Amino acid sequence: MLFDRIPKYKIEEFYAREEELQLLFKGLEVGEGLIVVYGVRRVGKTSLVQVGLTEYNVPYVIVDLRRFSEDPSLLSPSVLASIVKNTLKEYEKYSGKVKKFAEKILDYINSLDLKVIKLEVKGKRSELLVKVLEDVDKWAKKRNTRFVIVLDEAQELKIIPAWRKILAWALDTLENVTFIVTGSEVGVLKDFLRLDDRNSPLFGRARLEIYLKKFGREAALDFLKRGFQEVEMKVVEEELVDAVNRLDGIVGWLALYGYYRVSYNLPHNSTIERVEADAIELIAGELEKLVKFSPKRYLAILWAITLGLKTWSTIKHYAEGIVGHIPDNKYDRLLKNLVKYGFIEKTENLEYRVIDPLLPKVVEKLLRKHRIIS
Image 1 (cartoon, rainbow, N blue to C red):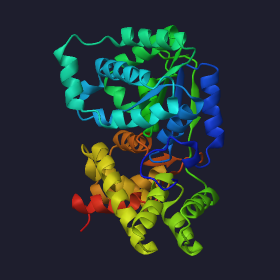
Image 2 (image 1 turned 60 degrees about the vertical axis):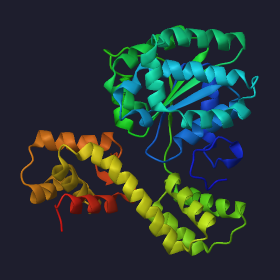
Image 3 (image 1 turned 30 degrees about the vertical axis):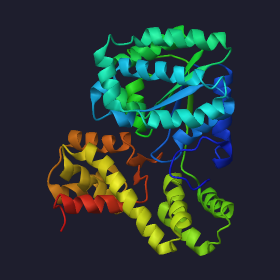
Image 4 (image 1 turned 30 degrees about the horizontal axis):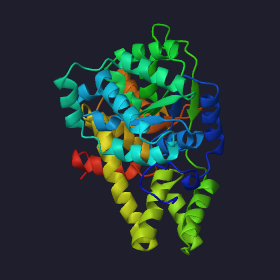
């Protein structure tokens, strides 16, 4: 179903992205060792990867690193080694039936008890990731296939620089293993990989880079129409236009709008309110992780941008009117962080603007929380 709250893995549930999907297939066909999928939050990166791997009929494991981020010890190579090894055992039960395996392995990964894994890793001699990957490579070669390891939201690994060396070793050594890394904090992911840094172990490595953009207006509207047609639900087009106006081309919010309307038969306005409420809570939690060390300055900058100010100097002038003087170097760092973490973007003509249409409401909520406005 197009209107689903979880990432897709069936091609019939996947909308558009044909060009990106074919690019992913090509990367797998040529045996690319590293595929990087960039895109802002909730544009469908995980769905693209899951659908692509299931359709291409290769065994894979997807590890959502956001689940591990609250306990840095769970981001260690030993934990990934345990997950990969156990996944391979699960796969053996399905005798090469990747699509059937995909259904079960998603449940398996989602149900992982991270505390148990941590105890397992501590309770015995930790698996060496290098050894496990060598075994996986041999296993895949024997079966004339590739094994794909997906590190979803890989920017979370930034606190463990050794991961760059592990990935570099894997790219140089393993012929039948592909790593796919995704990231919604595009700038942070690039800082972690450092693909263009001569001092990085990953510098100069061959890779395929795929960028997912928000849906354009026509595609967003068509997505909603097809979703409602799929369940034979009649919806007034003016309401769909309003939904696109308010939620933009972010497929995660559009799918949630459709999900609530179909599942609960809610009217348009009530559905929009519910989607916005859910989204605001989610985005606010993500934003607070970034701004917690300098909330007033960050929020003053964001306030200026949500009000329509676009240039470096006009945004700074407005922010200083709220929180007082901000040294240029500190202001520049805060602005760059907001871009790096995917809350705003810098256009080709050097102007700044919000990415998510719901960010202004999030900023207003946090401005009140931090008593910057009443």
